[in-house]
Image 1 (cartoon, rainbow, N blue to C red):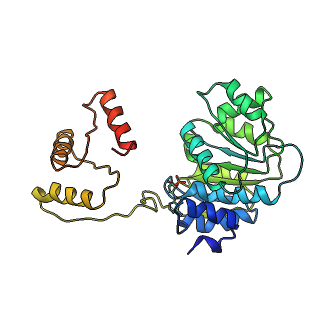
Image 2 (image 1 turned 180 degrees about the vertical axis):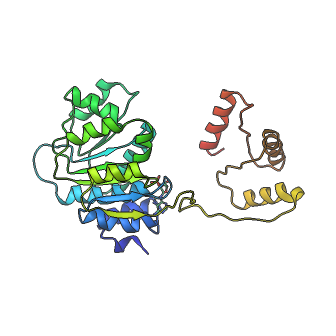
Image 3 (image 1 turned 90 degrees about the horizontal axis):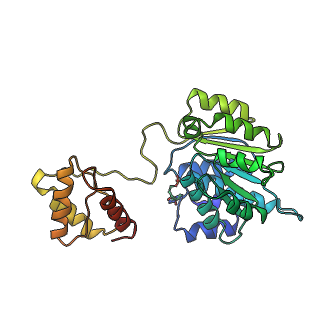
Length: 292
Ligand code: AMP
């Protein structure tokens, strides 16, 4: 399966190639054509399945295809549980829209409201928001949701866990009845099905991730090996395939010992666990993210 059979335009395909994706993930294969035809969608997909691009790519394309002259209005709204996810979705909008950009903004708690207001005033076609902060903007009349054509509820199960159900219901009342709605959740538990019944019209239903399944891009390999050979095998594999690597050990002492042994073998490694101070853990995390 390749991306060019899904109905995406050349600009989207170029952005996909830029990101180094060669094959669509199962959720992308199923969701992209459905979203492009304007249908509602109920998708069970965990983080790591490629679900963000599964809605970002077709939404960008739809917005471009149906763009009219006139003032910039909020035409797509993505509601997410956390600031981290808001930033991730916004980053995906930027990379996937590299060759046909849309104006987008992320609004979430913890950032100054006035700064977000200034950003919103410029006009955005896509807003990615956490529920509480979105309603703050509605109350302050700094956002107008009456022209939303596409709604995405991302990680809906987490939003319900975090007690956002009333905020979500309020947001739904502010949107035009005539719209496309997409609901993403890690599970199809009864409360998600109830929300889906309220929200979606004859949705296409996709279930790519049975509970406890490993996320699609992750390959699992078992190497049976004697205990005393383990660290040599690990060092060998790390040398061969020297990318950033997370290694989990059973004990904190085991982590310390392994980091030391890897260091002696010339492989830069740091241990991180509950006996380390916060600053030591932050340092290890920063070094890891920085690729050291
Ligand atoms: P998500 O499930 O949206 O959080 O995506 C998980 C990760 O998979 C992200 O780092 C994406 O950049 C990456 N990803 C998304 N689609 C693909 C694809 N078709 N091929 C390879 N990686 C992908």
